Image 1 (cartoon, rainbow, N blue to C red):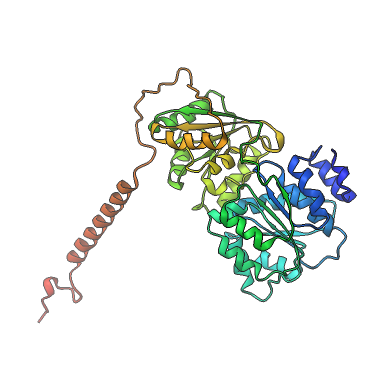
Image 2: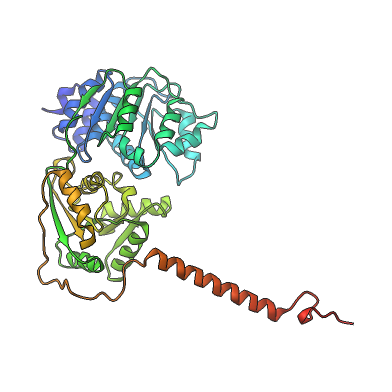
Length: 423
């Protein structure tokens, strides 16, 4: 089935062809026709399925012949990275049309975003928090919205955005088309769909979430203290050309990055404590090959889209099976192939079993030849939080003691120690 069967505008078909899209993915086949027809859509779509184009193309088709200067479509998404990714794909699809778009997210100046509101960009791609910041001002108007997309709705639920979404809905017309995409359907999301959607076309709603078919998955059992050495060895031996590495915490991401860079690996890191400029540099550098490795926390798991990414590594086993699916889904995107490696320490075996139950099969165990699994590391990757807090407190106590000693030497005002007054 070719894209021409959707009867898209010729300028959109040019964009599709230039992106190298040859045939639609299953989610695109199911979602695009009812969305073009104006129906609400409820799609349970896994990451890497091509769902972004599944909601962008219908919106672009319906807007391409409309007058400019009014914002008619809003796409809500959970993270800055995902908003930037959607905007990039939108601009590539719409490159031969007059349609304009802008991203609205935190960590950058509000000035250009205010300009997008005032000039009436056709489509806004926004995170809920920053959008609400703008909606406090009279220039931010969403009363002409005709198309609303909720992308990664379950992730927005996980991040606590459900109240923000309900607040945003109050600024939108009740008469609109809503396209609702979520990888999973927990009870609060089901409730939200019933509130928002009218007679939706439902797609893949009952299908169990699972990694994409093209992903080769493997488990590397390894002691916790040797994970960083194993990672470096896989890179050093060329088993992985490039890799996206997921860690459990921001602190561990920093330590993995530090471990690799000290050994000459071009690596970058991305997590919530990094500025937007740093996050953008890390992601762009990874996409262009300037960085061989990108170390990330789950904040980026659904917002990183790298063409032909060969390897994803779960440095830490995710606690939720859904997080596993979305992490490994960064490879083998759009029906390509890739490998996902998971490092499992003895204390993480229960979490691994839960993942295997969720995906319905055991994952193969791999032992790296000639790797010393009994070696003793020279230093811990992660200092326990209690130990870090104790160290910080000791440093502060030492600083206060030095300050008191300095004050004692200086003496009280008046120049005489011990409080004695001059006669």
